Image (cartoon, rainbow, N blue to C red; front, side):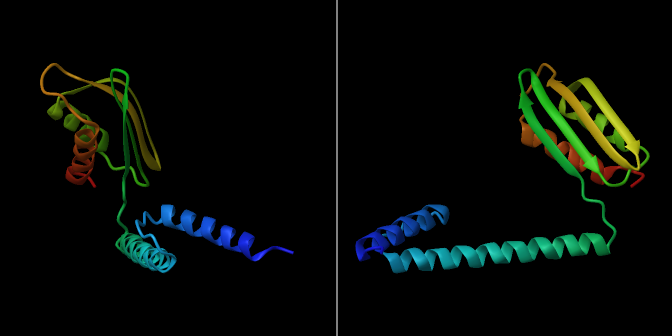
Length: 148
């Protein structure tokens, strides 16, 4: 049989795990549980909001682009994916790169049903560029694409 002390130790360990997962700074057990409850409530609200956005996008037949930018040795690795391929999209993205001072060293693009772009770019001489600025430039280029 498991002793009362062992059960208490296991419960304490589980509460400490719950405390760390929910980023709680509470010291007593009831406060840890209350913080966890609040954390779960916030997560449920975020999930509901995301589900609404997805449903709206599907209903409106909106194509949501996936844009990823990683910092690599001499610049950036840019990945773009969209369910639909629009004429002029690649040109719009490349113009955005030029506008922010990003030289494309290598790129692969496909437009067979969906649009995919993988590009490696580096900063031209001048003001430094961060990954977030590159991502925002791509997203804006997609929004501004004349043939969406």
